[in-house]
Amino acid sequence: MEQIFRVGIIGAGSIAASMAETVGRMPEAHLYAIASRSIEKAREFQDKWGAEKAYGSYDELIQDEKVDLIYIATPHSHHYEQARQCLLNGKAVLCEKTFTANKAQAEELVALARERKVFLAEAIWTRYMPFSKEIVKMAHSGELIGRPYMLTANLGYPIEHKERIKKPELCGGALLDLGVYPINLAFMLFGNSPERIMSCCSKNELGVDLQNSMTFIYPEGEMAVMQTTARCANDRMGVVSGDKGYMVIDNINNPHTVTVYDTNHKQTGIYTCPPQITGYEYEVHAAMEAIRKGVIEPEDMPHAETLRIMELLDSLRKEWGVAYPSDKL
Image 1 (cartoon, rainbow, N blue to C red):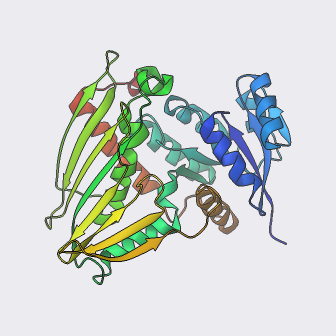
Image 2: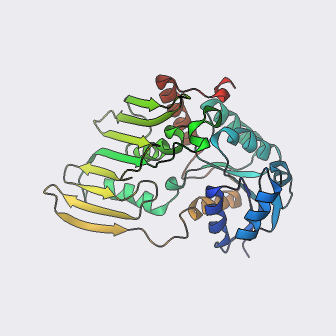
Image 3: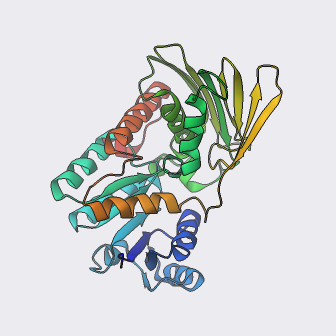
């Protein structure tokens, strides 16, 4: 009989709730514990989602010997220290994106995971989704759109009022919260080594980016043109264009439908995502599979890719003049 993984969640916000719903519907996982800074909030979460235990501090969960995997769902600013404590206590970690505040923090965590031989992964769900990976295969098949040369991608939500978005001490801004999605899609499609990057942003009064535009140019001429905004909703769509047609992704943050067109804009096919729980289950599956194998990183999002993403985010923020207190690590 396969091991039932006891999952603990740090943080009791909306993303934690999505993960709790997911784990609760996975036969090979068990929602073991929830930890919040407030025991009242933790118990409220426990009552709603059926967690076995509720803790009023993160340390209590981290030190619980029964937990097999800890999912970190707090603001970006908290990821480094919480993941570090998990690793020091031998706990496998699935840390919500963006992985850390900066590359220096990410490098420390990866080094610690390797030293302690403990599983560690960034939980950017689109990298684990079977349909996301199928989209990349479709784009490069040569049969649907020919050779892909261009990605355009947008993602926006009216969330600039949220504390985690507007405050630099919480590592706020559109880039770390939203920009990682089109960036990861570009890396999946065209690789992680653009030869040239052009970008700009607009900031709030506290100095974090609320809207940004990024263009990656690759050595063989491919381009990725991306926009993200925390000020307004947009279409969330991605378009992958090739020399024989193009494919329209309905939502780059959680793709459900891809519509393919030829060069005359005639629809030639529609592809839909298979049924899923919420979409979060795939990163949990990947974590459990890696832990069973005794490896410390997942195939879909290896440490080297997370570090490359963090390096890119650091360079964009430096260009824009967006700094966080934790950059002084």
